[in-house]
Length: 178
Image 1 (cartoon, rainbow, N blue to C red):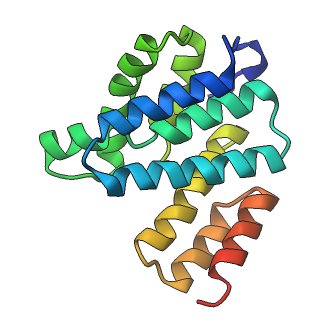
Image 2: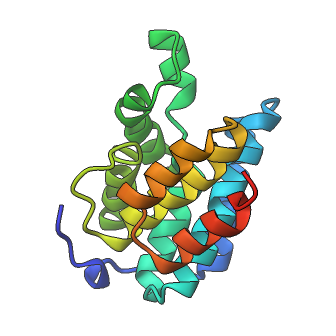
């Protein structure tokens, strides 16, 4: 989905806004420390990769909000499908994120982009936008550890999916001894 991210107007102070999103997601997943820790780690990697790759302020803001909310669909996926599979997350996540982000006062173009990213964060083909690429990389970096992925699986993802210099470097630094 080619977009002009520069045309998305970011309202307010993003430090405040991202804090509100973090707070909302922690409340949303209250009692589920594993899920909360997961999105906090993905947020940290996405923030660092985005900054080191030179994203513009609007791109960075969208990326950070998407990183925090990327797994918001898991709750409904587990209820409806008894599964947290990525394909179900991509279906169930955008409506929940839209409700949360509208309640927090974000504008429609930003919400649309974040929802699109959530709907594609397990879709690795045809990645062309930097925010999408970095979100996928950050999520994989965390999942590789949390799921105890094999060296072969990590190397395959690095070769076939990772595109940023920073994401590739983090993968090497984290999993070099495997």
